[in-house]
Image (cartoon, rainbow, N blue to C red; front, top):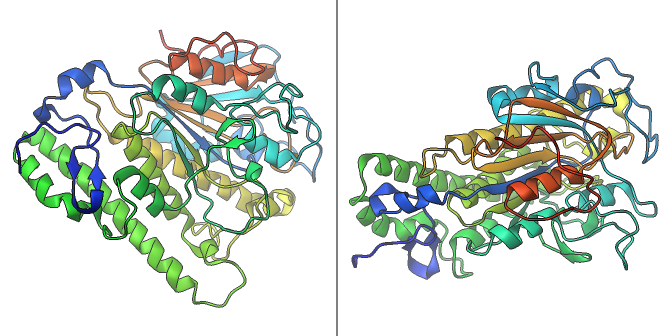
Amino acid sequence: MKKRNPSRRNFLRGIGGAALALPALESLGTTAHAAKAVPLRMAHFYVPIGVVRRGFFPGEANSIIPKGNLGNVMKSLDKQDPNPFVKPLENLTPTLQPLADFKDQINLITGMDRTFQQGTDVHAQCASCYLSSAEPYTIEGTAWPLDRTLDHLVADHVGQKTPFRTLEFSCNSHKDNKESIYFDNISWYGTGHLAPSIRDPRKMYRRLFSTGEIDRYRDVTDLVLEDAKSLQKDLGYVDGQKFDEYFESIRAIEMQMDRLEKMKAELAQVDFEEPPEAYLPRGEYIRLMGDLMVVALQTGLTNVATFMVGPERWDTPYLFEEISDKPLSHHGMSHNQTKMIDQLLEVDRFHMEQFAYLLGRMNQMEEADGTTLLDNTLFTYGSGLGDGSTHQYNDLPIIMAGGGRVTQTGQHINMAEGTPLANLWLTQARMMGLEMDRFADSSGEVSGVKGS
């Protein structure tokens, strides 16, 4: 092997154009520079169908369970103090319990609203317009208030030097097309111009780690292993440990992909009504896609990512293996909340457990300056509906995690009724370095989020 100083983004290249990226390592002489330039990242974790309010929101445990569809523009089920307040985040509700280990690294933000534009489906609009929140009826040539989304506006500023300006992940493995693209995508280059998400873990893996679209690298790490071992001789003890952990994580991702692909092939031979994707372990699939996102952020392949847990109103069932032994339709359950309340609460907690898993992964990854990936990532959990049964667009479930180097955390921030969700997006855009006076229908920033 010729002596060289490999870059972090493309440090090893093997047969067939396979490539891997690497976090900053002191032994490679990259730490001094990297410590001064650890980037701030942004990622969004989108959950469809809203949440069961009584399980998610503080103070609503005894609220009346909504009956049926009460309309798109209803206000909060419980009265709120008209004045915003910020207080320590103390007792977590049942749905938020999986975040107990990260209570000091998150902000629960309540009271954020969006305005529904009459004339389009409530589910399509709540997903496709979630990150744009354009003022109703201001975008010409479309029935949706859909503009260039926050992730791409931010990437215009922070994505100039990364291999991928943005990455779009989706955990909808189904190929049936009952619904339009507006139900299944939250990232848009602009009005009517979709930023297509990748749903297949293998395709995302190849996009991240390959320069050639070939089938010869079933195990990319094997292709570069000889080169890697040679490089490893030059690493110090600490970097050697980090190097081993990184390769083990890549190896684990490959093994998970192989397992899911084998299971899918076997299920395809079974005669049942639902597609085989419905029977894939849901949690394993979401965590696998999440691991790929985390690695991409860690290694500098991108600074901006969106992660859609599932599509809106798809109705095709999924197997929530920790909840039921039969596939369930999340959307169908949401319209029968009175009878399905226990299982719906379990689905909400299940989604929160996946979010918590990714927080844990980010919190374990040390950056060149001694901080963690979570410290340097604005990672937001949210949904375009405040409640899946009522279709309400107000009081959305929002959790802003991480970003400790620029945010105050460990808080419950309750905004005054009617505060636009775009206020949070404006706040995040400015935290990411954008100079903008306004975002969509914003009326100002979210006070209490920015650090000193």
